[in-house]
Figure 1 (cartoon, rainbow, N blue to C red):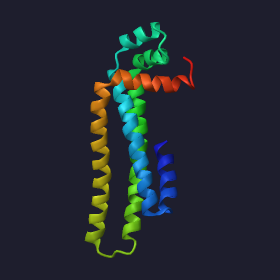
Figure 2 (cartoon, rainbow, N blue to C red):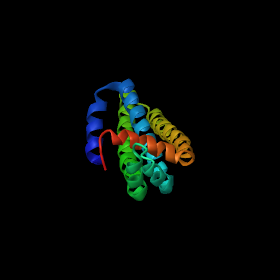
Figure 3 (cartoon, helix red, strand yellow):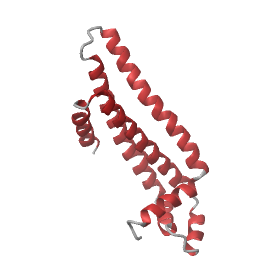
Figure 4 (cartoon, rainbow, N blue to C red):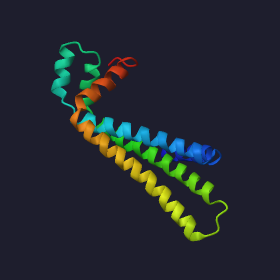
Length: 158
């Protein structure tokens, strides 16, 4: 999947320029941060709270119980699978930006500086927002998972 999405993003973003590639990277970072938050929230959510809500007929609580029961799989999918794919897409977008910015530059030191700066910015922004969301996910895990479950309840009945 990572190879497929990497190829797709490299193909699409390379022809769209710096602004579109930057917007694509921002979207991929956003998706990675949200899914990382969901993965952390799933592992720290309290199954007993969801069981109580399920008895009280709270919408989505039944899905919450299932997510809590399989929290390691939920976390692995959200944080690892989706996160890794988004990282690949960010890397492809970053490469497109570097190529676009350096296609007429002949100074190898400047090319290296642009490349390192682009990578550092992408990594720094990603890490910053993931750190903020992890803290929120740990403090508000039940609320986050319940919101997710209410959303999923519109599409799935478990």
